[in-house]
Length: 75
Image 1 (cartoon, rainbow, N blue to C red):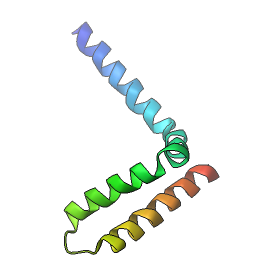
Image 2: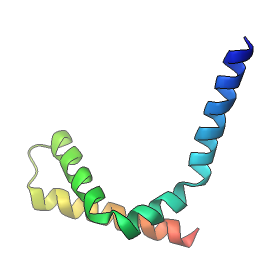
Image 3: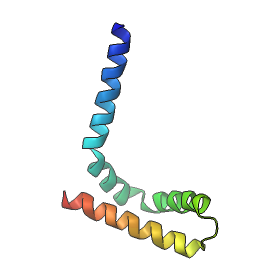
Image 4: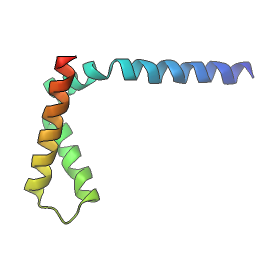
């Protein structure tokens, strides 16, 4: 039972820390991994919406990422 509590506490700390540090993560991704993140977004959106043109997916991902980064810098 004690091990279960330790695991639950560790997960809570990891999830909570990730939530609180999400803006820093977004800023770091923007500064160093923008193109890679954009490529992953386009690939994943291509799976979800295969009928869309690649330029549409790239535009959508680009706007969504720029919006998220701007929100992170405002906070």
